[in-house]
Length: 95
Image: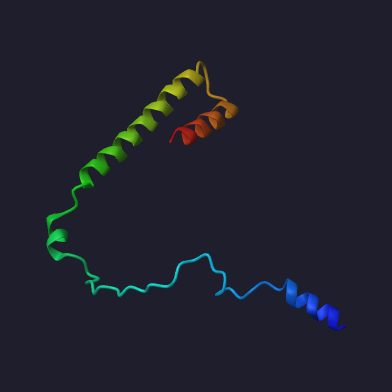
């Protein structure tokens, strides 16, 4: 039984602090920051509001134009159920 215990001690990995691949700890102090943010910056407004709105509206317009053109292609006489499902799924994929 002693040979088994000796073998276990030989095969046992060393503690994590002996052969660690991580560098030594170097804690930094957290600077004190206000959580409310800068009041002067909030009063000026967001600079990216109009570009974001323009991008959203132009992408919505592109999806609407795509759906309209695909509807014109699919409905030569009358739109069938399968063509309607295809129209909806293709429009969702385009969006």
